[in-house]
Image (cartoon, rainbow, N blue to C red; front, side, top):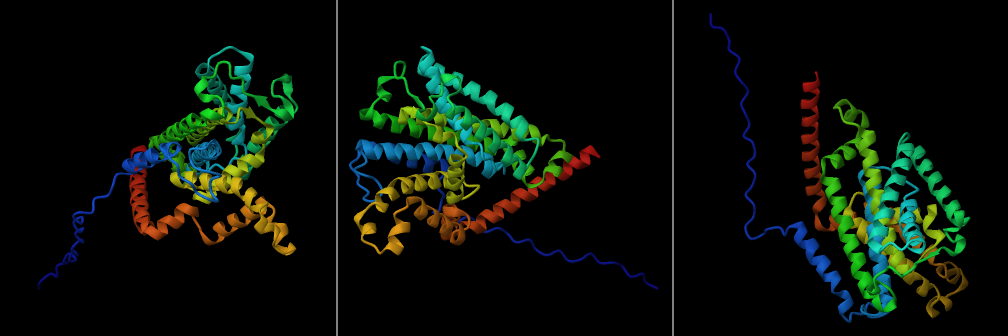
Length: 389
């Protein structure tokens, strides 16, 4: 009598990946970035006109000021992207550190004889200490509670500034920039072109720091904490310290951007300390696409241009000639801006970056890459659990 043997199931042939198509080499991302930065850097040297977008040719002081302001807010939005888009921490107090940079530099320059770079380093160190204290307290809670605690700190800072505490903040008039120790190349309307390049350099520096942080081990841990904090604790990591580090880095970057803002505007006013200003930065990030670095930049630039140019449109003869039912709402720039934002949220999920990815067919590749990364993280976590066991 023969004993039946158990046959092994037939193995299905694994699909062999197709060889890459010849002649279709992808351009490295860093090369694209360098090309974009180079193209933006030469704008002050060109005579380009964008009617309805810029008030004049790109070499004129008015257009340069608007473009510089757009670059500054793009860098600020990038710092908030690190906090919200990467770490998932919804803060209503990010303006506090932007204002700390602007007000701090203005106060140090007006009360001391320190040179610009030394004063900036001192202000940056003070902002880092402030962010450590605020972050250590705020991160004891999460979610809405975290947002409310950061809002409370921001409102406290706004009250101190408006009440001219110690006679150093200037109250409602703000703090003016003392230019004695500021290089002449950065002072005056005639040097707006130089400020444009300074703002562009600040944006590039912030982008490099944010990218490095996001791709570092700490960045991976903070992203994993955003998805599942308990799992991160199980594998032996410390989510609180990683979140605090991310919080401090984002605050330091916002402080640097605030200093550049002071050099451009020559004044720091209480409006930049309000929670409304933080909400404006949040709108920039959402408009560009949460989780996208270049989306935060584009969202900030688009928002700044709209915010500045819609005022001219609202007071134009075209709007004045409309019937009252249209004239009244369209004469309010914030109404137009709010309506556009609602339309983007409703019909462009993922913001401008999400719409661009859908048009270029990148979502499928992005999902495949995300699935691969998730599988790799889960495998590493399992090995870590086995080692602990």
